[in-house]
Image (cartoon, rainbow, N blue to C red; front, side):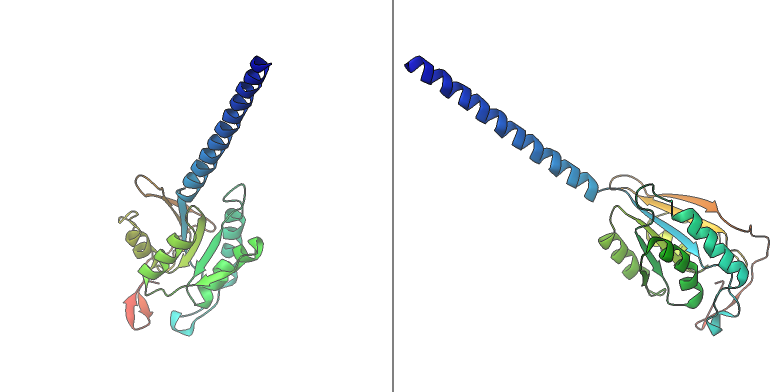
Length: 207
């Protein structure tokens, strides 16, 4: 009788140890999954606004060609990730940038977050804090896109963007460990124009 009880106790202890081991392994697996998810690669997609309908000082919207380019941008970026596409959208407050981002926002039912083009540090900190491990579209200007990428630690060799050049997509990957990488792609009608300078908020720049 005593031996029977002893054997039952042993089986009960073995069962308890197996359950404890399963609980521990499950907790470790969940912890590792959370860690790698929180430390996943953040992807930022930078584009200049599409073709504008007038001088920058007038805060113009897009031309028909610009609207077509914005639609093409949406077509490409909606499927940027098989699961969810772009996770967040940031734009400067001007009509041309907002109208460039709008088709993507409409397709994915996302809000457009407005940022100050004169404060790179603020927008980059906000994005990296709020969207770590996500895909973020950032719409800017010919003079702000290269500096945003440079401040992010991406390539500092981005060539100047000409006044009539609207077809660049820069994809910047920021891994939780390792070097930030930059890929430059093209979309829509290819650039064939020449660079020019104009005034923007009192500063001479290509925009």
